[in-house]
Each structure stands twice: as structure tokens, then as C-alpha cells.
Length: 433
Image (cartoon, one colour):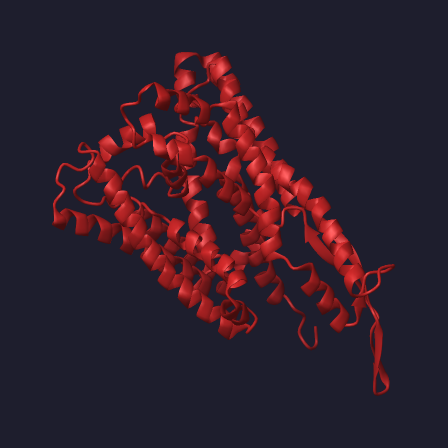
């Protein structure tokens, strides 16, 4: 990776793209520090610490790099855009007109992207209104609740979400890597120091305890990242043989290749879906600050620290892994493409047998990938329980797994691949070379 970056900076064109990308990301982080007026930010941070644990609000705060808890301009982060993209993916399956647009190539994708932009603006406005309603419900967070204050707060949040989308698209056009993914990557990385802030505090109290805690954190982080990289890069390669074709006096085709099926074809989407659903009870509890016996029991059963939370999350991730694969990958379409191009899987007849073989292979690797995602998702809860037993409560276990780690690893690998591809394109031999 370091060698790739060194080579990239020697090529002016790629260097300019990397510098432009870094410039946009710096602008984004400046926006994450600009406060929205009329909101008591210190009181909001205290509220997040005390009552937002395990709720959808905490999940959104992680994706925003703590901008949500600090009530800044980019508090909504890329959540409206991600939601709009997911909605468009689902609608493309249900609505024939959108499905037709998807198959029209570049023109169709441009139209779908345009619809996604409009939907992002609408969702940003709706989310901004919802967040304003949440702030208004607590008088300590927003002392002034007039119409002007409401318009300013909602406008700041919704325009911030739209501006983030624009920054991401600028990276796609003039930078390197995927803009939205890099913005999400920067947000998560920006929140990591706060997760490990307890280690220096431990070292001040007890040097030996701090050294042991620091060593354990480093070993765990390296081991989990290595495991995630290995599983993310793993794939099942189905051999494909193409028939020879004679055109005029020349023979074409006849080469052997493979059909790669990633172990984790769904990416982080199953964890995002499952985390959103299991956090609904915690979100409901936020609206009942004065809990009676019923709501106290409800909180104990559905709290993110309870075993039931981890079990439900584990099961939902497996279910959503199969669901997302069903809507994003069509074995019949792959089999038809192979047949049209004269390709076939050795020992498998074209048509339905090929579809059945690909489906069977997918089901097997999806199960392994689903268990991998589930294990990564519940690692923070297991480590949190262990840290509480040994008295390391101040170390944030959320940094060791779940959506955050998968996004960090996935975006880093994707960006390095993109840079390597650009380097390869510019390192070809000349006519006399």
C-alpha cells in the first residue's frame, strides 16, 4: 500500500487527483466543526452520553463522526444519501420503468443518479425536521422554539446533507476513489480517538494497567483487521470455458477464465439493515425519560447490553444477507450472459443447470459470509462485556467491529485498488519500448 502511494505521487495526474480528494475531505471536516445556531451543544453531548446508547441516534452519530452529537452543519452526514440509494435499489426491482433505466447503460444510470439526488434532498429535509422535533422535545437542548429558529435549524441540516452529496460527487469526477465512501471513511476514522481515550487515562492512574490495556487494544485491532481483510478478499472462483469461434480465417475464443463470487457479496448492507431494526426499541425509550416499571423492564430486555440484543442482531444479519443477495444478484442473468458469449461451466450444461449450480454455490458461500458479518457485528458487545469484567469500561469496544470496521477496511481496499488501476493504465510500454 505504501509503495502504491509512493508510485502514485510520482505521476502528476494521479498526484493531482489525490491532492484534490484530500482537499475536499478537509473541507468536509471543517463543515463538521461549524455549529448550527440556537442549539445547546454541550447539553446535547451529555444527552447522547446518558440516553442515546443503543439507539438509532447513536448509530447515526457514529456515521457522522460525532457531528450529530455536536450539532454541527454536517450532522446528518451521508445518511440521507445512503437511504436514498437503498430505496432506489429496492424500487428498481419493484418498478419496471426503473429496472429498464438500469439496463440502458450510462444514460440510464445518469437518470437514476438524478432521481437519487432529488430523493436525498427530500430525505434530508424530512430528517432535519425529525431531528428538530427531537431537539424541541427537550427544552434544555433548544431554549428558543420559535418559527425562525425552526427554519434556520432545518435549513442548516438539510442543506448540509445536500452539500455533502455534492462534495462526494466532486471527488468522483475529479478525485480518486468513491466520494461518498471516502466521506464515510473519514467520519468513522475521526471518531476513533475518542473510542480509545480511556487508555491514556488508565496509564495515568496505573502505569502497568495502562500498558497492558494498550498492548491488548493494539493486538486485538491488528488481529481483527487482518481477519476482516482476509474474509473481504476471499472469493469462490467458478471455472468458465469459452467455445472457439472461427471468423474468416482466424480462430477466436477458446480461453479459460473464472466467475468470481465474493464471500461477502452484500458488503455492509445486512449490518446496516439489522442495526437499524434492533435499535428501534432503544430509540423508542428515548421518548420516555420518566420510565415506569413496564418501560424499565422493556429497557432491560431490549438494551444493547442484553444478550437478546446480540442474538437478534446475529439472526437478522444472516436473514438480510440472503435478502440483499436476492435483490442484487441474478444467477439467471449471469447464466444467460455466459450462454450468449459461448461460455459454459465445465461439466454443467447451459441453461437451468447452470443457474442451479451458481445458485447452490451462492447459497453456500453466502452462509459463510453471513456468519462472518454476524461475528464482526457482535464482537463489540462481547468485548464490551469482557472489558466491564476486567474494569476497562473506559475503552470503547465499538471500534473493534460492526459497520465501522467493515467500512474502514472496505473503503481502504477499494481506494488502493482504484489507485493501482490508474497506475497500471499509465505504465504501458511505448511503440519502441
